Image 1 (cartoon, rainbow, N blue to C red):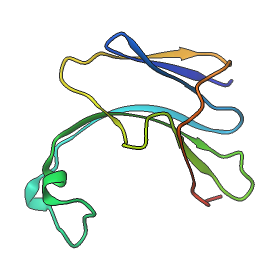
Image 2: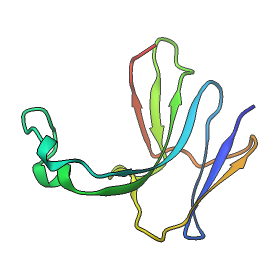
Image 3: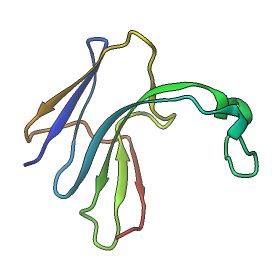
Image 4: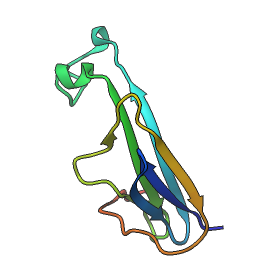
Length: 113
């Protein structure tokens, strides 16, 4: 069965995502608050401020495994990254059957079989 997700944030439609063929479709709400004493500048691509900033975000993506010899990550949010959320936001994920969906705005080959 192919599936689509319709995402709404605070009652406003955000996107209608889907995938044809083989792969994975995901919508994830995550919260992260890192321990500042664990920050190691030699191991982190982030600045200390970025590392220590509390995050509450929505990520929407798919893993396209239809490519011979590799896979492709795709996403529906802009290139600046996940959607930042705040306390009180309402996120609705409506599960739909097969049909049309918004084209992804970000795609990158992962070259992994």
